[in-house]
Image (cartoon, rainbow over all chains, first blue to last red; front, top):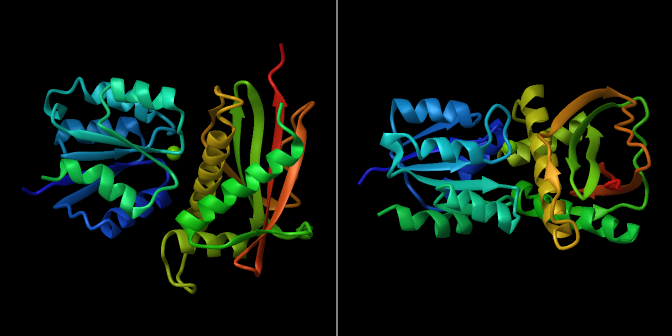
Amino acid sequence: MAKTLMIVDDSATMRKIIMRTVRMSGLEFDSTEEAGNGAEALEKLKAGPVDIVLCDINMPEMSGTEMVKQARQLPNCKETKIIMVSTESSQDLINSVMADGANGYITKPFTPEKFQEKLSPFMS
Amino acid sequence: MIEQKTYHETVLEAAKEVFETMIFMEIEPSQETPFFQDADLLMGSITFKGDLEGCMVISMTWPCARIIARNMLALEPEADITDEETCDAIGEVSNMVMGSIKSRLQDTYSSIEVSIPSVITGKNLTGPNIEGAERICVPVSIDEDQSAVFSLLYRMRKG
Ligand SMILES: [Mg+2]
């Protein structure tokens, strides 16, 4: 089944690096879109849900943790898999964002192997 | 309480991790602090607060910053790159290095909260000044012929 991806990060450089790493990990998506903060991502998710969201935490306007909470309230995002991609690595934060509805967590810096490991369970 | 020497090593290890895994460049500690006077510089900085508070800064020249940004974006060495893209890349380097420092200090300081990175440009940039803060400087060579300086200002939370 075709899969769609959204990359959410305030750094355009990081969005490109994530895109490249996704490609290097061998995972294929039908379409990809980007957002520069949580609020922009939510607007795009309201307009049309995606299968997988890779989401930064530390962003202006709206953080990734807040975005996860709000996305889980959207009726059309119940099935969306949200994987956090962040420099934050404290276990407390990881536990809390997972409890809020994230489906996975990747810390920066990352490798294509890490993406493969964390995303492939959601690709079938 | 962590020794100054340990902070020095922590910054260096964090920078090495980020440059090796995300930028594909080699970092080595350098004996000499590069002479940046009157050069056009970029300074990426990120502040933090919590049990330990302060600021992490990375300074370098524009040519060095462009090389780093092109590497991050997997561009050819001569490829065009805008100042905006270069600043964004250096901001993200600051973000990742600080994230790595934070996770290395987690056992001692569990409540460090990190800001959004910012980048300033100009000549003779002095960087932030935090009252009562210790300052360590870590000059490095990047892929042998480029140089940059990481600085960490830190102090224990009062009271
Ligand atoms: Mg960010």
